[in-house]
Image (cartoon, rainbow, N blue to C red):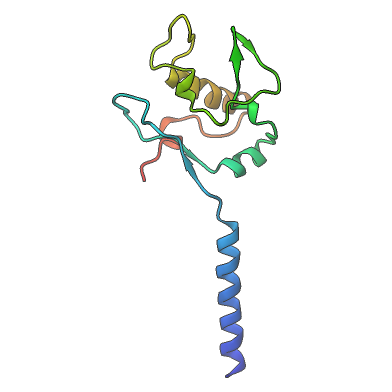
Length: 126
């Protein structure tokens, strides 16, 4: 086999392997809890986001409250947000589901001075 063909083959294989290992799984938040969602669920690369935002505690986003008090060192990451947040705010749930998402994400982005804050920046069509 010619040296150039071997070299090009090795470069191509290296590119494929690097791409396969560097692609972060992108998550789409499910809009299924909403009766008539106006937009698709927000998308983001979970691990890349947390690394860039220097978030190492899941409870920063996946918080858990009991009797209106934040439970320190507790996480709701195995439960959907809709388990605690209903479509409309009420006595048991002071923040509606849409506002819970928006307050947690957008407020953090505003406070940090970076990250998407406009609807279409998070709610992207496939």
